[in-house]
Image (cartoon, rainbow, N blue to C red):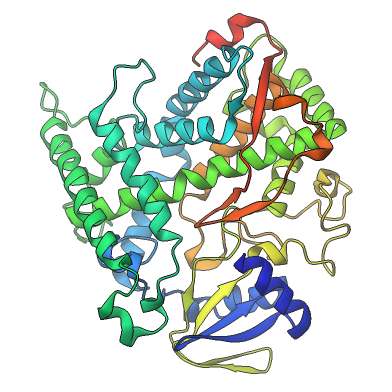
Length: 467
């Protein structure tokens, strides 16, 4: 796996390396100190993205937020995201939807009976549905009633296909002269997929425009797409206009960046807790004392759960959903730690290796939430991009725009699963024998899905409530 191979090279050659991939100069940062040089001291110089076939053919030719070149349009999209989509108020307005989708998941788990469940699969459905309802007012995986939703099914297959294509090494990205040949057929598949995505998203945008005004003539902002449409005429307060294409590209970003990442982090957390029963017991005790045993956890409980928050940080440390940062581009030549970095170089930050650096972390391979507790060695370290030894969401100007939403969803899911259920591994597998191997695609997934028996530990009426 790339993050393992690059970490091994860094142990031999140091935390700042130059690799030649095809015709592309790649610079790798593999320590907190080196990462902070790139993402803090020289952040402005490394705020653009290198050319990428996925962004070109699928993400509306770089008109999205994730791959847009650094400049006025990117700043406008970023401002829209910060103010209108992911602000504290916007997240609070949609809290009831996240809570409801989590309660749908808990009811499914509570009624699982003796059949083991694939936890990652169910988490994917939950996060995709919560995102879908918040963004476009519809579930991605249908409503669970068995009636089926043609659009939901279609969208599901497209998202899965996109994740597969995004993880493919495309030789044309590294040997530009070969791009036009499309030797692997990747570009052709991406173009075909883009057409399907565009038709799907265009229909939803048009539908929203027609429904945006209620019978009383007042605009109804029922989801993020409604908000974006209302911003088309004056997107940034300075007369900047937002286009339909940019809206569709933003929606695409949010779905692809927000589903796999959250669900895989939660799956890793539950796997670690099953392997560490003493830690699991402490989390349950804290949840029982703060929340009680008569209802499910809500987002409002999360801030009071000190030990639980340490468990979440330790999960992000050992299992960052994006182990290698999305690539950045050197706009100009610069000097880092005495080394010349040429203009046009691609920067990769090995987030995974940095969080396991033995020079920074004691017992780096051990799952030890206590390190983040008051009085612990990393008591003041957070995941929000200010402490470079732990940057699961990245850092600097291109830090993950949806970080606040991702954190809320991950925390709510882990807390609910721990508080609401006792967990047993399928087929009588002992916790210490649980396979913790990784499988690398676009995000850090488990090689072997977590198959478990959920055993409800609260009164049954607690699972029926939709907060």
